Structures are given as structure tokens and as C-alpha cells.
Length: 300
Image 1 (cartoon, helix red, strand yellow):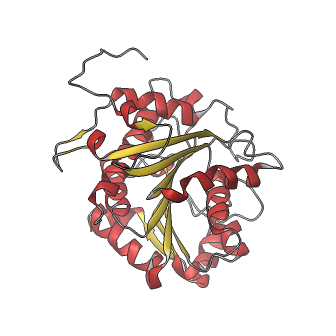
Image 2 (image 1 turned 120 degrees about the vertical axis):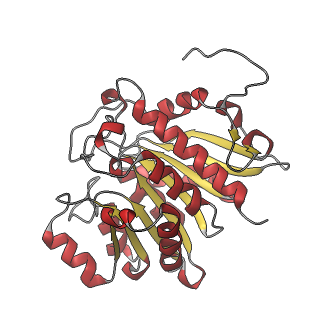
């Protein structure tokens, strides 16, 4: 996409680096463009590539914090995993995320929500004992089987303790009674979309962190953009009218990412072929920037 070259207006693409930097807070970036197991047919077009391109539309300056990200953060881009849906996908994702060991946080760009199972599974390496999970999603993603509707169920079945799973933003008439009752019976904390009418995004984020990060657990955050009001995210096939505002999601992400407990955050469920005016990928790019600003807020 064409943008005006101005040395006094650095685009957010200037944050992308090919290696870690000693003079910056480093955040790893990995693309995991899953799509084959989606319950809603979607294209194979690379959302990670589209989000990287959309960064060119934004600057690196935060008015609220008075911070220029270009002076603070290196977004270390390790590229995209090839065929993450394939038989060797789990091993390939694990190899890609290993690059983030020296970084404060890993940013995973999906893909559908199958990327969440692949990424957290890779980070835990078979031992979920030290992990908690926060999902910002209209859906529980606790269906049986293996699809983009099942990553939370897969993780729980593999050993993730449901008492440290917090699911935020659940939509009305977007989940089934059997799956909701099972989640609640197992001890999952559910925060419906309606909670945002009574409390701020920041306070809900802090409460989610207190549960998912209890006992010093490392926290993985899944940001499924179909939690957003449908008119704002035409590239999200399952978004519905009445979802969260883009602002609420951005504020929630900034707050959770400011916690040292958060070791990884993903952005999922965008199909770029449906996103004709780039509305959705631009929001995804802003979520990336909000996450980076959250990292800058962390105490050293």
C-alpha cells in the first residue's frame, strides 16, 4: 500500500526487526495462518501478511502515554509457519515460537482460532501446570473434536486446568447450553459481553489476569476479533451485531499486555478475502500496537 515518505512520521512498520536488539524491549512476531479446520469456510489468504502491511497505515506515537514505540520496542519478525494445519504443523509452530525465548512476549498472528491451540500447546511443551489462559472471544471454543471452534476444549483435555481459564466477552446466542454448562461445571470463569456495560475494559482485564495468573502462572491471551461488533469487523465471519466496540478491545489488550505474566498474545479469526476495505486488518494492526504499548508499560 502506498504511503507518503516522511522521516518525521515513521510508520509502524519501522518497528519490524529481523533480530533482537539489546537497546529495545523485544517482542517476537510469528504468523500461524490456520484455516483448514474452520467451521465456516474461509480463504487461504495470509492474514499475517495483511496485518504486517496494515501497520504502514499507523504511526508509532502514543498520545495517551507520551511514548514513541520506535524508541522502545523491537518487533522481531520470525515470519510465517508453513502449512500449520498440516500433520507437521504442531512441530513447525513449536520451532517458530522457540525464537521468542529471548523476548518479553510472543505475538501470534492467525489464522483462525486453531492457531491458539497450536501456539499454547507449543509454549507449554506438554506441561500446562504453569499456564493460565484468557480468551477475549464471543465464543467458548469448547466444541468437541478439532476445529477453530475447539481450541479451549483441546487445551483443557490435554491438561490445562480450567480453574485458570477466563473467557471474556461471550456473546448472547453465540454458544450452546451443553458446552456452556460443561465449562462452568469444570470451573472456567466466564465474563459475558454484558459485563462491559457495568465495568471498564481495564478493570475486567485486571480481574481476568488475577484468575489466569494466580500462583505465578504464565498467561496466554487469545484475542478473537469476532468478539467485536460486526459492522467494525467485516473480515470476521462469525462476528455478530452488538459485540464489543473496537475501543473496548484495544483498551483490554493494552491492559493485559502490561502484565509481566503475559508471555504470549494472539490475534485470530480474520479472513482477509472478506475484508474488502481493510477495516478488520487495520483493527488487528492496532491490537498489535496496543499490545506493544502494554509491554512498554511493564516495570523493568
